[in-house]
Amino acid sequence: MVEFNKLNESICKQTLDMLTLRDGITMENALSYFHLMQTMLNGYFSSPAFQNVVLKEKVKIHETIIPKLFDFMLYGIAKGEK
Image (cartoon, rainbow, N blue to C red; front, side, top):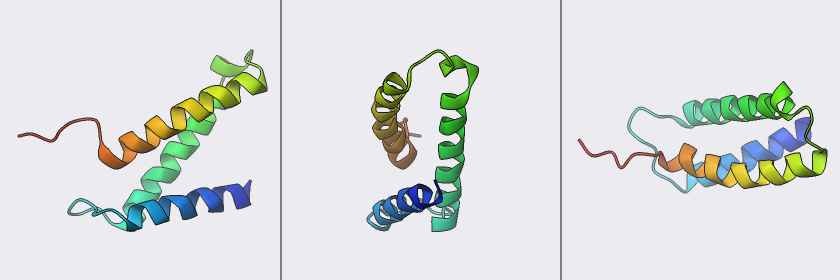
């Protein structure tokens, strides 16, 4: 699991390196947020909400959610108009 988390962090860092972070957001802030979201999502899939879901279905749902979550994490959900 540790190696998998390192791979995820590496991919996240590579992606963030290609982007301009908002003012006041550091790489460390962004990675902390990424780790928090990863922990929360893993907790969700380990919760009673998924206790009766077979592993194959959990993986399918997980793989559907991850790209959307990553997109929301990187680009937000609002246009940012004032």
